[in-house]
Each structure stands twice: as C-alpha cells, then as structure tokens.
Image (cartoon, rainbow, N blue to C red; front, side, top):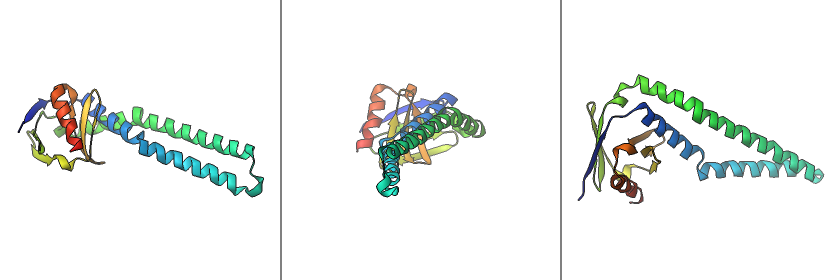
Length: 170
C-alpha cells in the first residue's frame, strides 16, 4: 500500500483561494443554476396564466424582462459576495484563528488521510468526504457545508494531486 505525505505552511492566500473556490463551485453549480431557471420558468408561467384569457405577448415579454432583471441583480449580488464580502470575512477568520496558521503535515493512503500540526492530529476515512474540489491553487476535501480541509496545490506533486482526486470516485 502506497503512503503519500506532504507538509505546508498555510497562508492567507491559500485560505482566500479555498473560500473563493468553494463559493464559486457551490454558487454557480449546475444544481443552483437549475433551481434558479426552474423558479424563473414557474413565475413566467404563473404571470402568463394569472391574467386568464387576457394573456398576451406583451405580458409574457414583461414577465421575462422582469425576471431577467432579477436574475441580473442576483448575479451581481453573488459577485459582490464572492469578490468583496467573502475576502473580508476570510481575512477576519484568518486573523482571529491563529491555529489555522500553523504548519500542517498531511499523510494519506488508500483508506484515510491524516492531518497533523502542533495543536493536534486528526484522521478521516476517505468515505467521510462527500466531494473533492480543486483548481490551480488549492484542493478542498469537503465533508459538509461547514467542515472541509484544504491542501494548497503548491505542496503537492502532480502524482499526489491525482491520487487524492482519485479518492472521490472510490
């Protein structure tokens, strides 16, 4: 059985990359966009049929424009959240929680992953993770909406990165 290990010192940029990646993958996921599209369709159909026999092309056009405007406002609000509010919140969490800044040793094999720093040690089975997200900056192992672990890609070789990503299919 192959065992991999790496070490890294977390930085604020790592935490920002982690927050941004998780936000973008959850906010702009197919599921989220499908829900918004379904809501828009339901409301447009409701507006069309609520006028009874008086429904016209103009009414349909107004309904579509109204929801296109709402969708644009929602998109702008999510961009403000992701690129203005989220970094401020991440910086605040980073500065208040010094334990997030300690060097981390990560070791994993086919069955589990172990994180170790001066504050303690924790081991999780791969099956504890619901998904693994990655981009060019960070790899996130997600247990739930409120519990996740990240490893900066700068601390991983390509072989190690591929090995971790292969765990999400098992």
